[in-house]
Amino acid sequence: MTTANAEMLEKIKSGQGFIAALDQSGGSTPKALKGYGIDEGEYSGDEEMFALIHAMRSRIVTAPCFNGDKVIGAILFERTMDGQADGKPIPALLWERGVVPFLKVDKGLEAEADGVQLMKPNADLDVLCERAVAKGVFGTKMRSVVNLANPAGVKAIVAQQFAEAARIAAHGLVPIIEPEVNIKSAERDTADRLLLAELVAALDAWTGAPVMLKLSLPAEAGLFQPLVDHPKVLRVVALSGGFARPEACAELARNPGIIASFSRALLEDLRHQMSDAEFNGSLGGAIDEIHAASVA
Image (cartoon, rainbow, N blue to C red; front, side):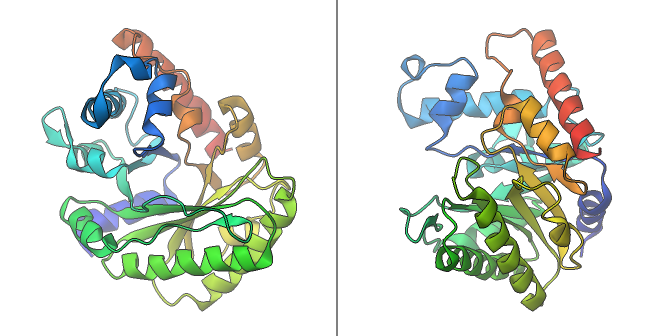
């Protein structure tokens, strides 16, 4: 393990902060831009769209408040990993600021079957992992979704996640395993419990270095404590899952040992039209609020 990787590992393992999710991909980019105050009629084609989202992310990661004091990691979209800000590759810029870079590696979701949405096949995963390692990325993130408390579906999701995690770990990267439970599901609590059982079984059988988990906050506060305490888990982080920031932070604070990995709840008040002072003030306030809930 390189010195930088050892320092990153320690930062993620024991850092007092949260992980920013800046990994909106092609399908979710228009919605992210609309939230930022840029309507679809204001750009034409994918290249203009991706240039605008890159400018937004660059503005975030170069803001004075976006540093390792409270933000210990950031999850990037592939194009963001390949891009630059302040004339530097973004993964290098992040680590200079004390923020550990991660990369979203999944290719999106399959149609629902057995109450879940598995990840699409990812033939290019090994090549992408090699590129990530070369750019100084520490870990990866991949998302699938549980909509219903279907035992076969939940088992399939966890099996796929850990199979892909093994491919990722072989490159020396730390995988973030994200089987999201839909917080709007009528079967949310039962799904949480099925997922917990499958994750514990998979972790008990895991023979590699510790992994990370990114989970929806459970319907019952504290339910995921066995995952927080598991020796094969480096860190448990939570997605906001559709909660607005005040509610997401309140839910997070009810689950000791879990830290935030918020996207929409982090960015929801930022607007393209803001002056730098307004933008930095708004982002700084969001970071303070999410940090406080993460270390509560």
